[in-house]
Length: 113
Length: 113
Image (cartoon, rainbow over all chains, first blue to last red; front, side, top):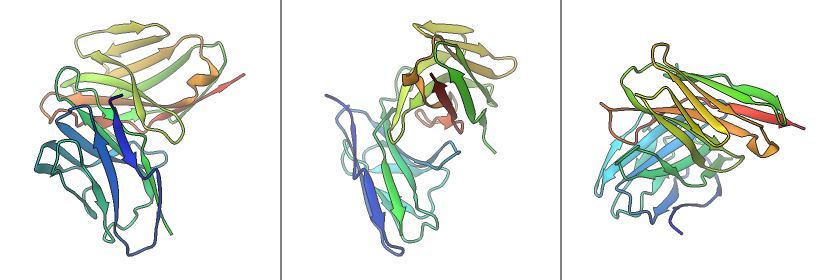
């Protein structure tokens, strides 16, 4: 079945550590996105990539980094510079055609201890 | 503040209709979407409406769009306990990069027996 796989689903990190969240899709989508979700807030865009080897900052990119070396993969690194990293992180992808519908992964919950 | 606004909570009795409201600010929005998020999961697209439409019906779901007032609503007929979730309104803008949706904060719908 086609879809988006995020891992790990739950992650605990100590302050000062970097952590990388994985996002893989087999939908053959060109564009991939990382959103952050906090309780009572909408989804906020961190980074997005529309083609391999290219990505752009979203609204809250500070303290995060990404890479897009393969079409299928768009990992997100939460660095120690991110002041408040505890959140639910969602990866999404789209073809960019038609309705522009985003397909989402199941999310990764990061908790900083 | 949010460009897309939603009320945060809705309680409804099983069997009744639910109406979730959303206002958006960008008059050039092309598609407007309703996504559903169950606890600890990603978002699933429920339905969408193109900006030149006033209404769209899909089984128990009815979407109404009032472009003049920039108001979008989602009606769920015969609400079931499985409809308990967070519902997000989102818009895409033709002038912006595709897939960069602007999300509301989400409406928590609780269905009581």
